[in-house]
Image (cartoon, rainbow, N blue to C red; front, side, top):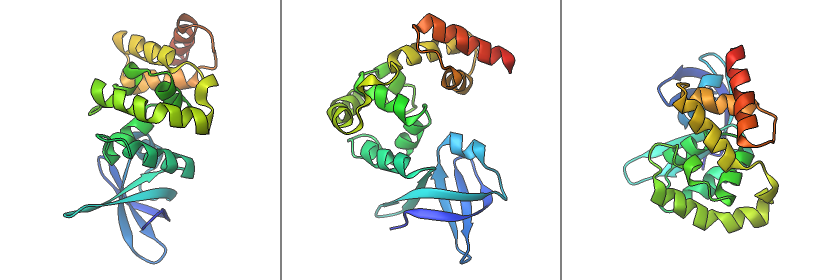
Length: 191
């Protein structure tokens, strides 16, 4: 199993990098949109990977940390969540925010991923909530349902989903949704 790659990005596509390792082998690694935007051709990269072996195909999926890889594996253990959907879930926000959304049962936050409908979001919550509460102690994290509402409000105001998510990530206020929204708007107006 290929669990980690280190090398130089020699090519990129819509959702993947081709990484050339020191021994001269190039691997195509599917990555989340956020990771794709952080790097460009010619950059050196260290990436944790998951190899999905199917009858007709071998696909390599990459994330930026071992912690993200562990959570990626937990996500794909849920029936109906494949590696592509798991990458898009990881792109929603920080691991803490995503885990908090699951623990708090925030379906609105989880259904922002294309391919994740209400039924699959409910399945993610049911299958992972107890596991995350016990192992991660996520219960005290920021209320992700509030964050999901703020992102939704920003999108309704005309900002793109990515702009809204990025602005909410920058906000350090833990007040109610209206305070978070005001701070997010300040962040967006500075750009």
